[in-house]
Structures are given as C-alpha cells and as structure tokens.
Length: 193
Figure (spheres, rainbow, N blue to C red):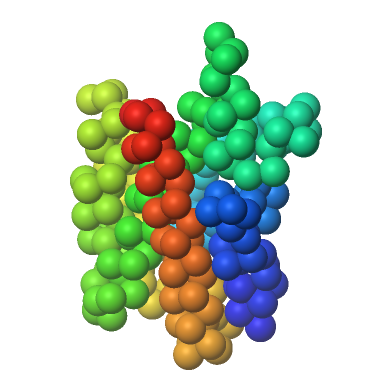
C-alpha cells in the first residue's frame, strides 16, 4: 500500500466550478502534501508549517463564510472590500509554496537519477527565493541540503510498489499543476502579487 493509497485526497478531486477551484477538496489535497513533506524530514518543517498555516487561514475563512467560499477565487473576491485580506494573502503564499513543491517533484520525476536536493534547490531558486528575505533564504538552503536520498524517499512512499507509486505521483503532481495554473492565472488577472 503506497503513501497515496493511505492518503487518497488528490488534486484531481478538486473540481473546477465555472473555471474556479473548489475550496475544500483542494485544501484536503494540500493536507496530503503536508504529510508528503513530512517524508522529507524535520528540516522541511518551516515549509510544512507555512503551508499548514495558510491552509488553516483559508479554512477559517471558509467556516466563517461558507456561502462565499465555495471556490478559492470566491474567497478572494469576497474579501476585496475588507481592510485586512488574510485569506487572500494566505492563498498567495500557499500558491507560492505549492508552485515550489510542484516544480521540485516534476523536476525529480523527469530526471530519474537526480537527487531530491538538486530538484528542490532548482525549484526554490525559480519559485520562492525571490519572495524571501536574506534572513529566510539560509533556512531554506538548510532544508534543501537535508533532503533524504532519492531512493530512500521513494522507498518510504512506495512500500515496495514502486511502479504504482510512480504513476500515482505523476497523476497527483499533474492535478496540482492543473489547479495551480488556474490560481496563478486568477492572481495575475486580479493583479495580486
């Protein structure tokens, strides 16, 4: 039984409603990602904590205004008139963290011999480092260096079912990538940086 058999929430389950990402299935899938990050070791706890904190803020908004929060985009739109846009900022940072993780996993899947450290470092440089101050960058540098060896990471997730895990991970990353494109396009259209 693979990691994804034990954690079945998938980004493919987050439907698009009129071209917008359904909130709760998406956030449930992000919580699976948080568990996946646990497999990378304690050095990834800052990434994990950041992502989990943003999920919590979005779920809080959903719980407060469920009728205005069916999609991630509707959360942002409903928050526009408010002085503090906590959920909007949470989704922005969640998007950035997910772009980083998605790219790292895609790079690693595309290059079967590349170590996780290399894939995650490349993804960090492309997606997150520009958003971090010189005080935060070293924390992430340490996390990248502390990535487990590729073979150990995948063995831990596959539990001996390597081919099945590979197919599941590719599908899971493709679902994440698809939903991220919708969110990125929305943030660009709304001019939220």
